[in-house]
Amino acid sequence: MDRRAMITKIRELAFASGDLGLYLDTHPKDINALRLHREYSKELMELKDEYQKMYGPLTMHYPSKDEWRWIDEPLPWQRGNY
Image 1 (spheres, one colour):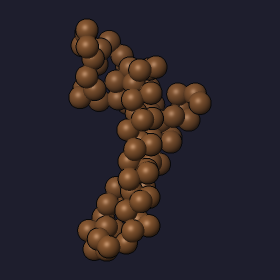
Image 2 (cartoon, one colour):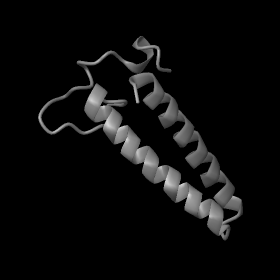
Image 3 (cartoon, rainbow, N blue to C red):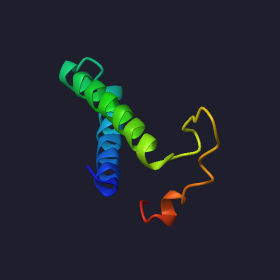
């Protein structure tokens, strides 16, 4: 998956996970929605981690062990990824 496809998938998963979270606020016993929320949230975390290892941080909150990489990369809006 290339950079643009990864960003698109991250956005889709973030939307779906957030939307399901709102739904679960009013339907907390919907087991299928809870399962989907967990699935999408896990996939989102994994994809964000993969993206950031390959292309650099998405936000300043991505931890880097050895350096402050946020400033070295183009900001998301400078890449046209917003």
